[in-house]
Image (cartoon, rainbow, N blue to C red; front, top):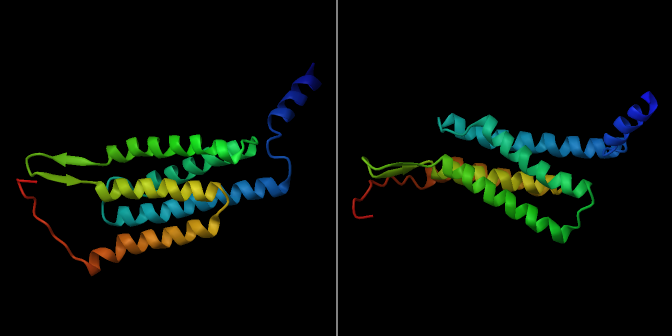
Length: 162
C-alpha cells in the first residue's frame, strides 16, 4: 500500500520530467516576476496604488496561465481562449485601480490600469517563451512611463463640459 501511495505521489509530480523543463519553467516565471517588478517599481516611485508586488503577481499569473496549458499539450489554436480570459480578467483588476472623483471631476489610475494590462501581456509573452520580446516590451513601456511625461508635460485641467 505504501508503494502505491508513493507511486501516485511521484506520478502527480511528473509534470516536470527533466532538468531542461524545470529550467525553462523557472526561467520564464522568474523573468515574468522580474519584468513585472520593474514596471511595478516605476509605479511605486510615483506613489501609485499598484506597485511592485501587484505587477509581479500579474506577470507571473499571466505566465502561469500560458505555461500550464502548454505543458499539458494544449494546441496553440486553443490557446486563444486562455488569452481571452487573461485579458478579460486583467480588465477587471485594472478597473479596480481607476478612481473617479466626481467632486473634482477627475479620473485617476488610468495609466496604472493600462500598465497592469500591459504587464499581463508581458507575462503572456514570457509564458510563451518569447523572452526577448518581453524584455523589449518592458523597455518600451518604461520609456513611455518615464520619458513621455517629460517630453510632453501636459497638465490638463478638468473641463466640466467633458
